[in-house]
Length: 304
Length: 240
Image 1: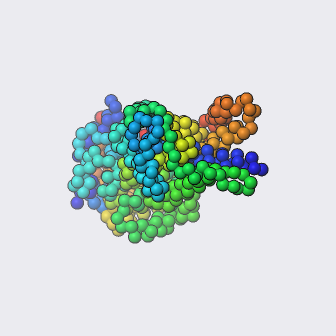
Image 2 (image 1 turned 90 degrees about the vertical axis):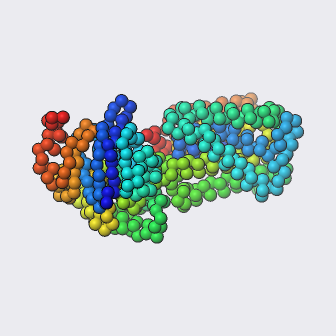
Image 3 (image 1 turned 30 degrees about the vertical axis):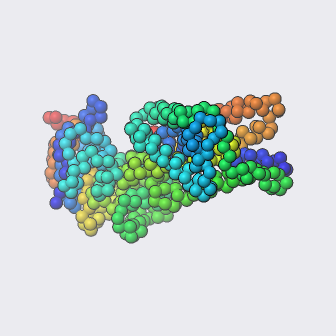
């Protein structure tokens, strides 16, 4: 029972991380048909934004020293700003380009951000302690659950609820969903293309910042490549969920998180190092059975 | 007063020229039918006015203000609402959400609820299923929805690409009745692509015949229908 509870919390917290990442990718894909591969570098950028530029091994914490009620909004703002800047400076110019061109542009942008960080901070991972108290376990029905896991799950659920309310209950949410469904038609009904796209980028950037905070708190390090893994899995989650489907991306994020944890717990000891091979194997099986994804929206067709 | 002025526009898709110098004027509160064979450029004309396809040369003005090259959303905000061919409902959105998308740009926010009630009154089927995703509707129902959706944007000029397509005759009558009533009530200007010349004749108004990207014939709908050149144009017997 205790182990089962442990597995459930592991799965939920890892799945939360992937779901947040998948959301950030799905939102932009929805309105722009762009898979933003720079998303992982947005995550790293937000983490490094807490540090003072230096090439020492010990991080010089800068913004990271702020109390959480200032640090969190600040980082969300930085994430949103970076994301909006990317759209205005880079992606806007490729708006009518084909999806492959936009994807390459996002790779290039990712390289630029990564090498900017390299220049300022060197490639050495830095240790960073944000909220040590979150590492302490809480007792729950006999199982010891790290506080951070609980916080991660709660944050993710809160983000999901807020996002659903935004998309379903507000005018801008409605416009965003309409644009994701049929961009040209939405514009012909007065929906501002730039507004909707900027909003999607802003939200996506904030999600990247949230992931950065969780990752940094969890691992206690700031590493330039730290967003890459989440980005990869998040991208796979959006594909499995059905590109363009927001609920699908979230569900698939949780699914992959759960699969990883379950494989980790159930595979024979010697096979555990190959856990990811099993996870990706499962991904291939899913795509063979449902190439359009588990929750493909009716509007998944290409935009004209 | 001229609501819409199209002046000598050309539109090309790559090497293919779809419109070659089309000029037309629609007065406020007027109804203009656009007819012609398949591929003549009727839909291209509407899409060019809506800003969805770029024009090569020429200019377009709404109420005297140039909109050539403007973004579709800015043209919509000037009061031009297009119901394009092919029933572009937002499939994942409910009927009610579909109807509300175009109301975001309206300044008269208090009237929106009244207009919604009115659309539901005209099309009770939409009211019954207001929380159903639009993708689940039949073709005819989707056609009603897109017309209702365009009306919810409170346009002053409404362009419809083949309103009769896929609708039962009774519903077509109803759609025209609504459009004509709105035209009388709030001077709605109508630009309608219509294949049925009898329908155009019954409704009255003016008619232009497009063929090969040009306007080849123009006049009161009732007279044009009797003109042999209209038939010839359709079947390609013309001197063109």
